Length: 331
Image (cartoon, rainbow, N blue to C red; front, side):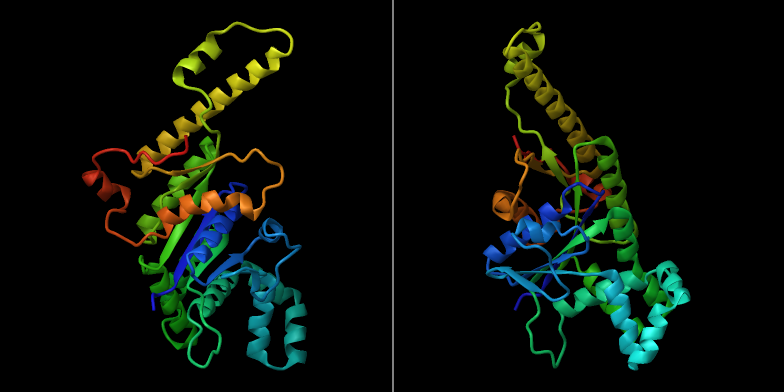
């Protein structure tokens, strides 16, 4: 049996992390993998995509082979300390304490560790657990700052607490995250300066400091290319029009300008990271549902879930071997 895969999707807020997680989940399930999507946000976006009102703390079947669950940080902390104290009266008093709440909010890594430990339980259920583990787990993760904090936590805990159950779990998590055949971080961006800059900085930290495997970056909401270079030139050189044609001309010029701006940011990202990003085109609909993402899933799945090879190296190493740009893009 092939070892389970963990995909950790993150990016700047509002870039489409849930869209990417849902698309990848559908693709993995379609391949016959028992798949779980883990929602860490509280906006209910993942449930909505699949036609549900909300997700709960236990995995829920979305479709054949695909489950989803929502993790609530507060519930994780309460469940953990209730299990330690065992006596309901004591745990109730502790959890109601303002000092305890302030401490758990300020202490580094408690909620992050508990979330990662929860993931480990779904990937490696352990002996004596009847349910099967999932073959692919996709985390619809928090924004990049919080995600980096979470991914640093096992190393910090393994250093501070080398022994005991806590240290043992931290080392298991370190082994899982550091296994490039099993774990990847998937960075999602928009074709905008701030978002691209954050993606570059985050990937450098993930690969350089944390030595994690990072998939090809994804740029979401890229305007498709509607006009050839000749057509674009004619549209831009044409004078102003009156009547009904005026807004059409303005829309065409806006589309050309927005596409060019996107291409500029894509080129910047490619140069900085030494890898061509995967482009997802803008969906021109106000009500996106899971069925609308199947095309995205095929595109992402082939790039992200493909077997690991040695060609994907951090920039410093890949630049030595690179002979040209990958031309995979959305035109």
